[in-house]
Picture 1: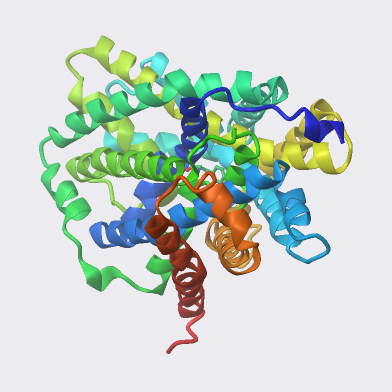
Picture 2: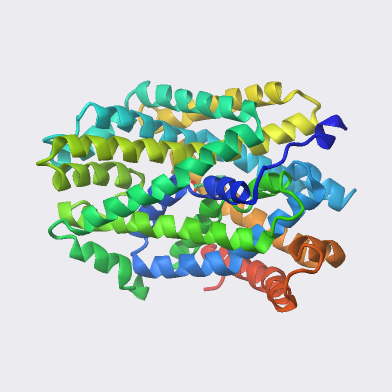
Length: 456
Ligand code: PFF
């Protein structure tokens, strides 16, 4: 099939790492990680999170890379190529569906960042109190059309980059953005920590209180791991189908895991000291980032308004760009699937995805305001999509990817991919396989069963 033979490639190894890290680093790190940490008690949650990254996230990422590069196709077809005539293709299809659903609510939050760029640029944070910021945020997300409008703008930006194709669109934008994001996060962490009263925030972040850990916290830490690393739905599998043969898969996964976790922890180092300094509850939920950060700009640079404007605009622009490299990867999973499976042009496939996700986006955005009363299992549509994808579909996908690669896939293929034909040390390969065969599937199953309360 032509679509397969002239598949694009990422141009360089740095490009590979940056594009994968670009997918991983996003709202999941800067928006979602702090509020999940805040809702589940702080430092103890972070320790569990890091354990999940090491034992589930990175090993499964290597598995996804191997499946993708070996099959050189979208995530659903990948299983058909590696395991023809078996039901494994449903793991790929579930991934495509997860990507579609995530994009449907992720783009709403991504849209919020655009509105905050405008607010920052027009200096509207000046002179407001902490309560004022909370009020303004709630008013904004419940507005009947403004957040939906920004969501659509964001979706169109994603659309055009995806249509432009892999190398030009994805690789280039990641190269400049990632280092800049890191620097500005460091600056902001410094500012937040220097606010008076920030000490209790640091304590919350660094001193574990294990009494706060329960089944929910475990499930949330696991879900956050898969979400943040973009693992469990074939996203990195799709990206790996564009990798060249000489890319070192385990090393790439380790790098991505390291970058992703550093950005998450760094975001915590901004949000919690600032939240405690101005008296915002750490368990404020999805609003946490948006109600805490304006205080940092306002308080740390109150006497230098031009600096406050400059830094806040830069921050929200970089946040939007980080979200963009993630929405591109989500969009790409579904677009590549439609393009290759249903013989559509890339353009047509991309249009279908954009329209479908925009409809979901409008609905999830409305579910925070006008449609608040309409709930599913007691959750708004927005929360429901988040719960279903991050806490169920991605870990379930990760579970099956681990079983597939660890138990089912021909070990000759697995070794060839992971070790680039034998250049990698054996003990790393064996330890990785052990994690994949036993630790990850048993661990994930335990957390699911524990959450269902079946162990009591
Ligand atoms: N990892 C992204 C983030 O942390 O913002 C979100 C995401 C992207 C999840 C791609 C899943 C995915 F396949």
